[in-house]
Length: 255
Ligand code: BT5
Image (tube, rainbow, N blue to C red; front, side, top):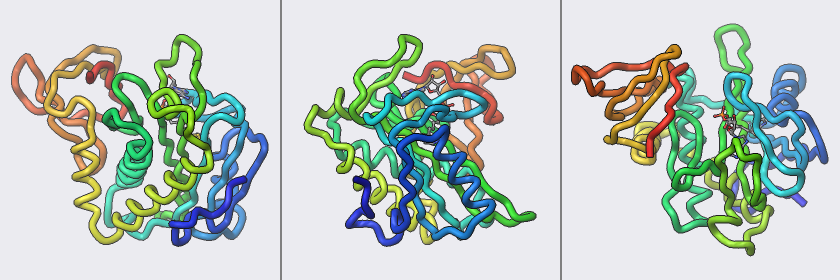
């Protein structure tokens, strides 16, 4: 069902399809640690039972309705760029892919979520394998809601079917997603600055008043930018100073 996309150069040349697995990131990490693999290998499952998000959170995906996959890349632009570049380029690629199926604007909620209006349509989890100081492989985990139309009440989600119509097919989204992510990956090697510029331009809440929680305390401010190493820059409302916040800050309101 999942073949190498016609328009990619190497992404999806090797495809590991698993009818079910706990986490495609976990499978890809083990592959990268213990076996030889080709740059651009993709691990995909139809039924991810323990999908992972950031900091122990879960990615929930109904069997057979969405894309849950991990791409194994060996990026040459690391270490000359911060490790956050991997999340940034992937977010731009996923946004571009999703945008080609829907008319509403698709945006990035810092640092790694893909949103349409106030609902999340995709999530990204980058995990890395190191050999000493050297990056051996990056596992680019992507969850994209395609045909699912209901979620538990606690999850504010949307899908391509809800936003773009029921004619959307998983195989078509697979092709587009890998093509767009590979395009931005390749661009990152030669011109990362323009990729990062796109990341900033796609940010939800840019230049607007936002709310966040940092070390248990609520803070508010104007979202100024994101630094190249992924720190959110907020111009705080009370004293007008610009503060860089550590990634363990959670952005609670940016629309
Ligand atoms: C993410 O984490 O959004 C990263 C998700 C990455 C999932 C992919 S699937 C393939 C690969 N293999 C894995 O095991 N993971 C990757 P985070 O920003 O921490 O967001 C997690 C939160 O998103 C959860 O706590 C829920 O609130 C929400 N959520 C869970 N499932 C969702 C869904 N299908 N759609 C929208 N929101 C969801």
